[in-house]
Image (tube, rainbow, N blue to C red; front, side, top):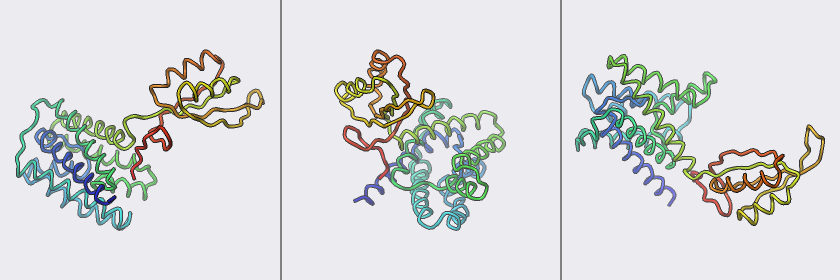
Length: 282
């Protein structure tokens, strides 16, 4: 059942990616980075199908990844790469879908969002589309730079090269918009839309605040023993996770109950437990 679910996610994600390329990115020559970006530059000059070029250009990348990252990761990435490439050529070369808009700003925005949605769904299906992912991992392994930085460097170089190849200053600027938006949307797909708030509270009115959290907000939490480094005084810290809509009520109550309370608030994107729906990739 899990394999069927992942396969469906990969198909849906790759189909959305194919639409993003066919309807927004390829008609406007907006390069999103990675191997697909190199394929789009080659398509501009040679007129060869983008999807087919992606598969050919990925051959040395996957061979490098097979040696560096292992068979399992490369096989999963290979599946996503092949399916997404097929959908790109199906929509652009076979069905010849028209460009959705002649406005380059709208094309970069909607192309970036759709690409991010598609990639995010593919990632949730435990696959990837290869390209800069693998290159970033190789750079990370052999140079010591972080994975995110390695992928960013790869995409930045490819997008910048598109400006030289197409002799256009605007092309890479739109490409950076596509890259930024797709990256942000991928994070939202993977981390979840309805993020919660992790709240850490240090106060002399712990009992009152704890009672409000349990009875007023219908949330739970944990009280931890603590010692103030500045005052060298024993006390308790409340650790709780609440829905973001409840944050204003909690802040208002804390300010009223103990104006001197010390409160730390962080976004948290995945919570396992009663009252919360997990967005973990399983």
